[in-house]
Image (cartoon, rainbow over all chains, first blue to last red; front, side, top):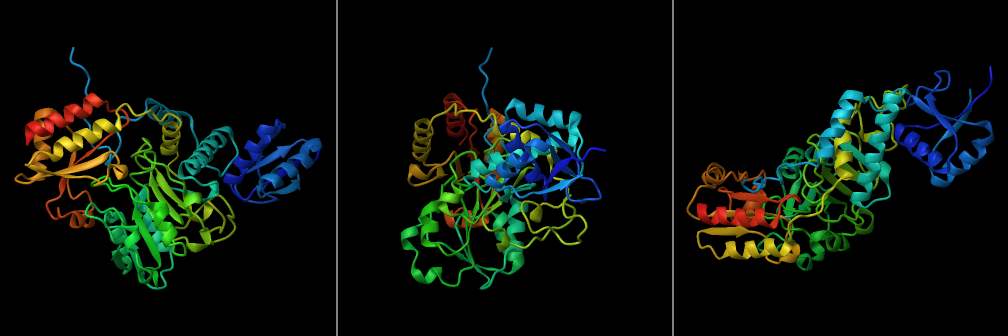
Length: 72
Length: 370
């Protein structure tokens, strides 16, 4: 099965902030459930295309939106 | 056909009418919406977006860039309780405005906090220039009702914070948010409590607070947040720290619609000032309002000298259809300050939907009824 890169956030506030930032820049994304083997945090994480994840990481860091990255 | 008149003058109690979009948005949530967080299907994602977009919008209204420090609650009273019960009072002493509401006075009494009254003019407007250095010492917090729900006086928040620069300031914006500008960051306000159903024209059951430094408060209501779920302790990050349980999402849908559809005033200030001036000429009533109209909002009261306030309010309703509130308005301190305790007053509070004709009709009803 293909590996996927996801951005994890500590709460919904940050998920929606992250989504807004990603949407503004026009990156493809998908909000998906957080896999339970990673965390039971807030129920949502954001899946980003492999080619875009470095840009999105930089974008979220620039905006000060706390996150972590996992491969699922 | 008789012209429509808006005879509802009890907007300080709760606003009416609301923008039509408010009810539509609430119905949309009831029919289509989901919860906030906790899972990742469209119904929940859509509702979570609405909650967070509303939080950001409220942050803009309050004048802060720290959107995550806006906490949803069910009204300003609940918010004030959370702030006061979560704050550590070292000296057990606060200073309050002379026009405080029981939303502040009762929690302070429950907590056993000593209360001093800030120096003020006859109308309750805080006389910042009379605050002496000794008043500032050993004070844990200053609390100010931004706009009085009795006489509508608008307090000088920024000047007050300049004097009390090192003391936490709690602003009760129940009557002010949506009516006058609030600049939490610029004025360096520590806490702002607000409600959604008055000046913001949203539904009841919405409101909350802003906290500049979340570390200054402990959470006194705890429970599930959908985050850090493996722990029995509340998360220490915002806004989760103060938001246990499912928020009033239906209400927040309505509040967002209200924030996105705030109408322009259909009445003007010179007309209101002219009506106040004319009412002041009537020897049978005392008008409770700001001495200087620079500090007057769209709330004022009258106190008939020889008539019971509830009887007068009933007469206005029974004979003219005017809907108002009479009594102490949950603000005995304000009435003690203004010399109208325990009788109280008959209060009139406007909506942006009122017209100058509505105001003039109100004036004629008061004059005829007295």
